[in-house]
Length: 222
Image 1: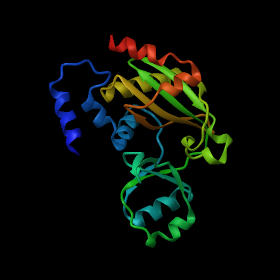
Image 2: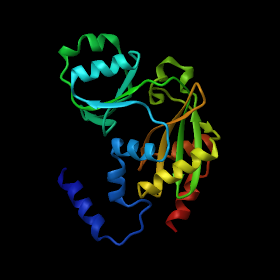
Image 3: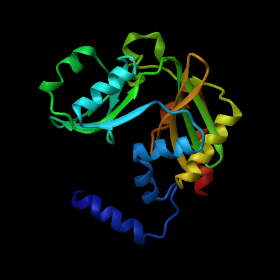
Image 4: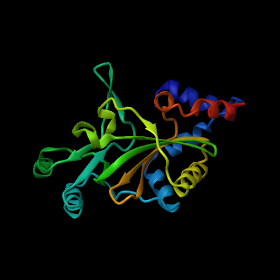
């Protein structure tokens, strides 16, 4: 943690301000494994998940999941590289990677079964207001694993009331007022929780869909 981050964390304790979400709750909610634990507790379906740096354990997980798994970082999905910001996308783990594991130094990251999906969903929740948007990521080979690899337009999408209620409960469990939740819908019509960004971007969703997210944020801060 650098000096500026330390200063901010100290200021959060002494500034008498109204936050959309408490900063310390945001820090805790950014923990992807904690998110999965809470989501499962609330009854969300979640992917089979492994966190490991063991090559043998990874090989077994790969085999147990029909040799079809993805990997993604434990925390930050953006890094500074050559003075530029680069994205770390979710990627498929291929057979050649497993065969050549001895050539890699593994650091702990998240491995999950690759669930075949029909649509990806971004559910923005402010308090008890739920704004659901979808994206047709499966229409392009480039975006099938991670929709962020293409410039795709989001649209309004309806989700079951039961899933909306679970999204609201998830924020309450994490002590958040705002959250951007990523779900997928599989080929059997099941809604599956992937993760929540407690400080996620939302403006482009409003631009694409005309969902009134900003109005709801303003009302929460009044």
